[in-house]
Structure formats: C-alpha cells, structure tokens
Length: 464
Image (cartoon, rainbow, N blue to C red; front, top):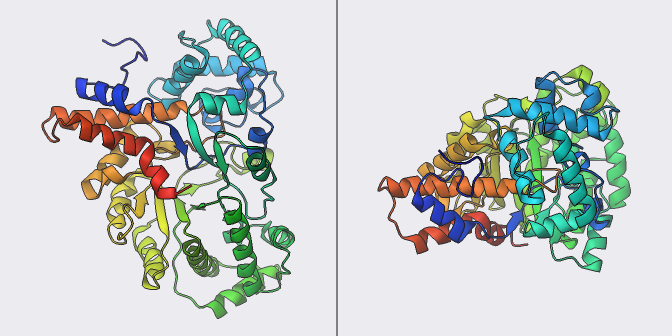
C-alpha cells in the first residue's frame, strides 16, 4: 500500500515511475486555455489568505460544497473568509474519488509544504500555517506562475476587450508570456437578451458603425487584427451544440437585421446565423494562422433561480447530450472545401463523444502534424478516468504522440498542480502498455513522447 500522495502516487509500475521522474516532472507548462485575470497578473496581485486563492471564483468547489449541504452564505455569500474555509474543510473528507480531493491536497503539498489531510479538525492549523506562508513568502500571481515553471499563458478575452493589461505586461516585460485568446461567444449568441447591447460595445472597440451584417463582419475582422497585433494566436468558442445549416449571406444578413431591430428569432434562424458567422470567423483565423478551439457540449445556467441570484459561471452548468457528428463534419468540411480550415482543437464535455471526436480528426488532417486535435479531457472529464479514456480514444484512432496535452481551464493560480496530475496519468498509461508488452521499453523514445505531450507539442502547435 502506498502512502497518500507519495512521490509515486498514480504511478503503478517501474516504467511509469521512470517516465514521470526522469522525463515529465520537470517540463515547463504551456497553458493554452485558462480563465486567469490579466489584471491580476499585471498588478502581481498578492493574496491575503488561502480562501482568497482557493475559493474565490472556483465553481468546482462551490458545486461540491452545495452537494454537501453548505448554505450559500458560506460559498458565495457574506460569510468571513475563515468561515468559508471551514465550510470547505468540512466538505473535503466527503470528496474521496473526486479529483478535487487529490487537487486540494496536492496544492497544499506543492505550494505550502503541508502534508496533513484537510478536515474540520485540522482546518485551524492549516489555515494558520498556510496564511503564515502567504504572508511571509509573499504569494502573488506572478510568483506562483514562476514557481510552477509556466512559460506561456493564454487568457480568455471578449472581442470588445481593450487588452489594456496584456499590453502593459508586454511593455514592462515578464518572464512568462501572457497572450490574449479571442473568445467571441457574445458575437454568436444572437438570441441572448444582451446581444444588441454587446454590438454597441463592439462598435466602440472597432470604431465601426454597425448598421448591417457586412459591418459586423468587418468589425470582427478589425478586432482579430488588433488581437493578432497583441500576440493572440488562439480563438476559442463555447458551443452548447454544433451548428450547421446551409444558408446564404443574404439570408443571414436579413436575420442579423431582424435581431438589430429587437425582433425575436427562432432556433433555425439562430443556427443559420451561427453557421455562417462561425465559418466566416474560421476563414479569418486561417488568414492569420490562428488555431481555432471548439469547446462542445456545456449546457449552461440550468438553475434559473440561481442564475438570477448569482449570474453565470457560478456552478450550475452540466453536460449536453445533443448529437454532434454530422453537423461537426459539415462545418469543418465547409471550411476545408475552400481550403481555409485553420488548425482546430475539438473538446467534448460529454465523454460519450470521445470516439466521434477522435475519429473525426482523421477526416481533415494533412501537411501540419496533428492539425486537427482532440482537446484534453475537460471540466467534468478532468479526472483520472476522463483523461485516460480521452487518450485511449485518441491513440486508438489517431496519434497520441502528437497530442498537445493539458489545459488548466482554471481561474486559480494554484491550479498548475493539475499538470502534475495529468503527467502522472500519461506516464502511467504508457507504462502499463510497456508492462503489457504492447510498446517497446525504449526509454529514450518514450521519454521524448511524454515530454512532447507535456510541453513541446503545444509549443510547436500554437507557435506563440
């Protein structure tokens, strides 16, 4: 029996141990998708206590606390930071089997050198010890990134964003490269209540008066040019479903004009608009040699009362179960037919689509190694089973050796410990293949493979 989270946890054989410690462990981090705040990075925000680092904005933990019956006062409410920490400490022992249990203790070990398990009885000591370390060592956004050996961070930014803090970081210099990621969800969600208001923000940012659909596309292209000048090489789309419906620019222009006049649209009109707009954006990304990411299948804001009370991204999202294969093929093929399909990363929140995605990749590969990628196990799949199943599907249908690896997808500067968790799982999976005689025990070759998956493939793919 191994000790809890010892140096070889999640490494079940000697090959896995050697691959991790000799090859993967020390590799830098390339964080190509996250939700960190660039202002906090620019200001090098210092944190006052562990709750501020751990629980502010972390809807993964919020969901777990609600599942444990914790009152909202101690989650997002006006309770003190210590009271919120206590509520979390009472929840942690209930989380065995959940990756949050491992991540919590891994972060305590790696960033605070605290090896006690967190529960109600140890909470006060851990609170005091962690906060003493925060106070004396000066935990700040930048210091945590450097401690984690992060080389590149790609944030998630609205097209109307000024990118003020990205420019400030770039001008003053920082060892970690911080670049924006273009996230035009509000440009796609034409039926949202704030769509017309957002168009006003886009007008202001682009300095283009948007009177029609052509103006709108011109404004988006202008913002892509601006993002590109600021170092952006990645776009990102959250797709509840994959839209693809044959249409024409004339029809979409009419749909857009209808919405600008505050008229309601039906689902078919929405899908035609999204299809044409996504395709137009893909063509723009291709022109600038960007990579396009599709995060597919999050069904958001399911609890109306809580959405009205707390807003979005507060822990009330789940998996969608819509069919995606035919429409995804149609959308990618529409770009491929005109030779404007950019490098594309496909994520699925629903693991039942692992083989849909992994088999789809091969339809559109060519010239660029791993041009169409199966994005890493994401959100509800960001766990040992989810990661293994994603990589097995990818290796069964394609090239695991070209996989771009782990994305943090987090709002916390402590979440880089998840890269260690991921790398251990990669090494263990390959180690089991070696032990079973399915892969030769060539450590130089396998070491390069795990280093590529850990960092090199992402660096080469995104070209930042």
